[in-house]
Amino acid sequence: MLSLALVASCGAVGKNRSNDAAPLAAINPFGADLAAEGTPKSGGTLLLGMDREVVSFDPTVQNSNMAAMAVYDSLMKLTPNGSAEPYLARSMDSPDGGMTWRLALRPGVKFSDGTDLDANAVIVNVQRHIDKASSPAHAYAAQIASMRAVDPTTVEFALKSPSGAFPLVFAQPITYGSLGLIVSPAALQKYGADIGSNPVGAGPFQFVSWVRDSKLVLQRNPGYWQAGKPYLEGLEFRPLPDTESRYASIQNGDVDLIFGGYNDELVRAVQDPKLKVYYGPGNAGEYLYFNFNRAPFNDRRMREAIIRSLDLNALGASQYNGRLVHADSLFDADSPYHTQAASDAWPKFDPEKARQLIQEYKASGGNPNFTFKTTTARRPFAEFIQAQLAAVGLNVKVEFYDLAQFSSSVVQSNDFELTTWVGAFDSPYPGALRLLRTGANTNYGKYSNPQVDALLDQAASTTDESVRKQAYQQVELIAGGDLAVAFFSRSYLSTITKADVKGIDRYGSRDMFYATTWLDR
Image (tube, rainbow, N blue to C red):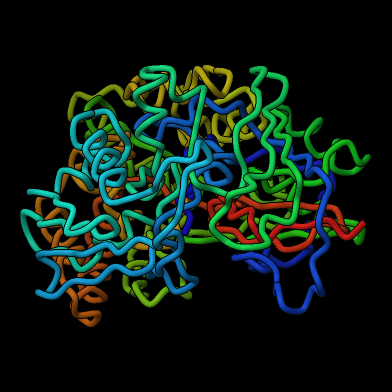
């Protein structure tokens, strides 16, 4: 999964350019070969560098939180093929083609405060997503018509309409909205609105302290449901938003692991024999959001003009160390949901055609000039875009924001004409739905096509994989024809570790399962 992909701004200028190098390929995208790494050693504290500060541990609050699954674990877990399998839960199945689902919990699992993770706890948590419209998982929870505890370890969900993909929403990372991260109801009652700063879950680690913009400390959960795990005594997360400082911290040993967001740190890490890299390009990736609610990008001609103006070979050479992973479609070429027809139809670099489209737009009374908003980390990228668009006659103003302000005040607030984003994902549901469905929680450009909505709903509801495949291929083809976003690159979301960090178990979004991680020291 990527859920990546992750809510993040995209890209970064490269330092060590090797323009004759091949595009980046997947490297252990879902983690290490645990069986081949030897017998795990117990003890030690893992130091982790994040690319931003955590906003909240409350699963109903939209944010990126690399520590969340250390505290909560997840009821279900995504597999490399994009399906969901039981993890903290024991099973999840439907007796009637997806209209009703039964979630069976492992008996005896307790939260770190000693209370039971039972059917009632699941119902309480899912109800929070139903009640809170701003929750990133509200759209998934809203599918539920009713819930009941069949017995202390079994929850039955009756849905409003059939969903063959319903287990997937219990396997998502916190960033993309998950019904599978369960908070202790006792802690919810105790802390109320402050639960986001006082998390209590049933994961391998428990909360100790948090000094915002400094460090977050977790310690081993002695009552963890997987006997003998976790191997580590503790985790210490440090926010390191500056890309250069973050990479320097892993190079000089200040931290043991960093969550990489950009091409530059990934390329350098791949070239460093003292570091280990985990990376998968995923689907979607880095792209430009068009605002369909504002001129000039409510007009398809201007969206096409932007795409045809961008020389991706020059972009790769100047901004991506010569190792840009090109994207011209929703799904990666290796995905079973990709259709070559979508890539064939995607507009190619053609500045003369771009000029023609711009002139047609102007002749119809439109003003083609606009403001391009991005993060301070993307300054060289923005200057490249500005220059490329100036070459076809567009006067583009550029505005820069720090990452936190950019995410909330620009993108999530729909306050832009054109902007940057990363939205990689492993599983087509709910990844494609989040990006493209009318009103979806990461459809920040406000793209809307009823035909695409219907196909996304069909893909989510069916239990027939052949029907699902055909629906997603049509989504890719139609949304690509609409130029819903401007794809240009796959993602570079990576996990980079020192050589003695073992037992990495991750999603493509960088979200990790920490029970198996250990230090070979």
